Image (cartoon, rainbow, N blue to C red; front, side, top):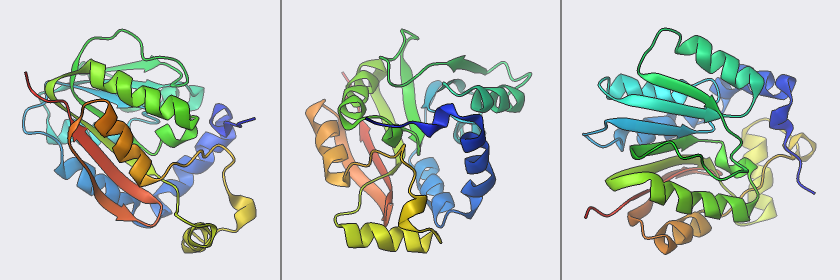
Length: 211
């Protein structure tokens, strides 16, 4: 049975305290920002956490509006605090284990280090839902924690983080980069690629073909 510790406030707070020390995490987000389309009117952030990734997108495209989805009370509190008074942003509670709500279409859908907490089958289904909610010509950008090809490489990744195997987050349900790309291809995304990777951190992306 899968375990999702992100329902626990202390787990969420611990991540927020430690995330900036994760090696190359900033590099992944820099690549995500590099891939933001020139024209973005509306962006959806999946598993938004405290809204830091959505804030980066809106800094790059200040005329856009955004929707931040998360299910954790502490993350939602911090996101609402971050965007207080910003009329461009709607923060809403949604558990990604459930199908995406009917909240319209988006030119850009982003996610950063969130989708890997879902069961692989649900991750794949979510990619299909993202495709349906993108406008033609829209883009999906996912900075993600992916699976190492071997247990030895996974242990090396943990060592690079200064962690031991017993420190592994049981919420993680990691999938290989190749699977992410296969899913994107299968749902009809174009220009699918892994645009950056360091060990178990990767940025995968794809476009919804224009009409």
